[in-house]
Length: 328
Length: 266
Image 1 (cartoon, each protein chain N blue to C red):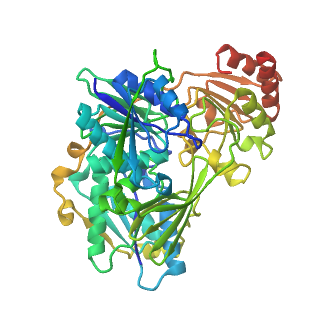
Image 2 (cartoon, one colour):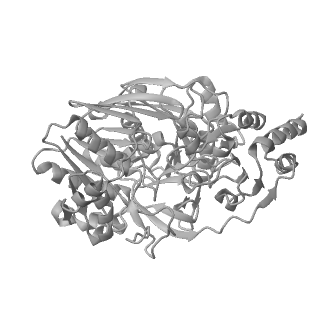
Image 3 (cartoon, one colour):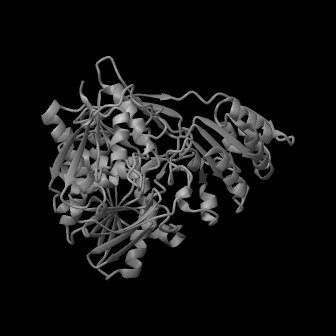
């Protein structure tokens, strides 16, 4: 079986991001999953990769500190890993990475360097009768489903979070560790990161890959207590709309929509969200959409599985209290 | 300073968007517009020259697309670009992002070969039709230039560019050297509305139309047939099934909680 390389995304403290577990699960269905790891690899992460069936962990070892750069040295590491895979086991069937801005930049550089096609925001990958991998994505705010194949180089697929249910392999593997020394070119080092400040964690799941998200809209106003209480009981991430960010009621990092974060959680709850197209294109792939809005004409009701015409200020506390009761 | 701003002609978000029989995005002059996110790149370029110009400066709007795409560069000229270059050639239709990047790179090289070299290429953070955000990086790679992407703040000082971006809970400050490709987000500024005078002045500005031959590009290397990806099908997604819609009678919150628990969503 051909190898499927998965560029693993890690958390700030070096653990495997949940989205990467989804990718390993997907890779197992398509071929032999090989984890591609950049940077320091701890025992915890190694065990997680084994649990999710990685047959090998390929670690490009660059001669620079990757954290001081964006995209280019990372891409050179991935290109080296692709070449190494070719020399060991033949052309990989695909390279999977997550649909984050950082990974998409790496994907674009790898694509140009290797003449490989890229499909982004992929929601599923299925082999067709000829064995080609067909990637599905949605277009134009979910109004179209587009299926594509890569016809040049190594197929590169940037997969959306929550597209696959992450499942551990039947039995943990003992992945072979492959270190590949990589000499990073001078031109890849022109852009330097001079400072990096990690915002303190809210203690909630990451918005981009959370399985539940509560989004606060204009209708909730500046007091987000009712939204945060609901997010706490659901272990959900808190998102927002552009208006709420522009009003300064919440940080821009929480903005869901086409210029913010794209989400596809299992449960989306929009409180006081009208559902402007800019917001919808960032959340329409959510599996179950719940909307609470005082305006019965709000466009979000067109895509809601469960809509409540009502005031979020009274509906949310009742919802939270009843959930606490049911979960107690 | 010579700045090229790449702009894209996209279907209006509010229009009925779709695909052609050849499975490319349908683009017509009726409902096509300048990609809204490119306005931030234009605004940055024009105000940079207004604030820091040396008198020998130029902002050039560059687009690639069908005849109708002139509408996008026209808007760019109204916003203050000095002139425009429109790469228009039947063979380009259906190019993927990497074919597009090669064509734009060749046009930027041509613009730089005439008179002063190009110092800076600016783009928006995404095009609102495809939303891949791959182009800025692909273009930088095609040019062999460094990149500073998704800037929420950007400063140019001599030969050095400093950009700030905020991604995934971390704020990064990066520096790079000109010439470079920079993309900016919609957080960086508030694009201006062209006034009557600017709209009239734009009518006198030049739009140079170039074909692939002018750029020395073999038509066989771009377009649908040379694309590294191939769309197999594009089908209209069935509308979501009509959901439950209730008006709060004082118990809607509690009922929703029951629904979420019954459906294993909470």
